[in-house]
Length: 112
Image (tube, one colour):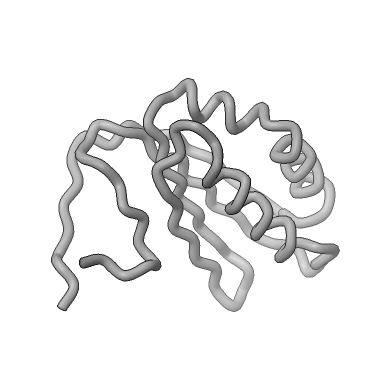
């Protein structure tokens, strides 16, 4: 069984949105907004899971998994998510890159 740090995804195909970012030194509610976006995304139709890490220098990678491209488009257009994106561009991120990929194969080493 996987630990809670790993998303539980179905058999492929599905989609991965890879968001890599470099944070500014400003906090201005970042942690609260990140928690809200994770909670909101988890209720979005087509959401499959998320994995996220950030190092001490502020470089982070969040991968969210989605059933369809349409689900990704709908999430991108979510009103609260749009507001968070705008705040990220203005305040929280020095640089970011977003990539969308179709997952064709997936396998894991079982925990234990």
